[in-house]
Image (cartoon, rainbow, N blue to C red):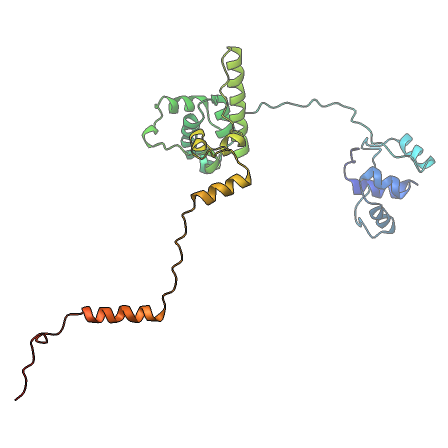
Length: 269
């Protein structure tokens, strides 16, 4: 993407008034829309803006303007700076912490030392914006407010973001892994989940409890079922009426007589 000139509208005003370039050429050079250039030419846009000469400011040469006027398909190219200004690389210092949050830094440092001891002091300094002597005093319990310190998450306190904390922890984990490999030690990694075949399989003892005999033929199964089935009781014949009444009469005769009924009645005179 080409660089846009300084004060693009003022440059467009000067090019419209002092050159015969097309609207498309001016619009592409200044990074504006063609309709804006048409509005500038009609006086509807950029009223009161004084045109700025791009030749005097060193952003465009006369040869470029002549090339553009001779060929409408030619696209103007902005001139590069005549003096190269070196880029100053600033060394990153401790993170700036607002005054209202500075009293929470010792609690955040204590949290980091307890939960992430693998993180270096330089990483803690980047996260919380503190100094190495402060970290050492909190680690050695020589801080002036050590009895009152409570570990608190720096993300919750607003001293850093969760992304920054995760990045620093990940860097520390990779560093420890490299050091262990350099010493020839086994790298301790978190365990993985067991495969589904192992987690869903029944225990061996439980399986032996429910082991069934090999399947037999259907006819053999039916024969076994009939053999094991209890025999049905034989059907009794329905008694006839004479037999029933005979039994009732016999029961009546066998019943004992009422009290005093066994005495012989006396004859009347």
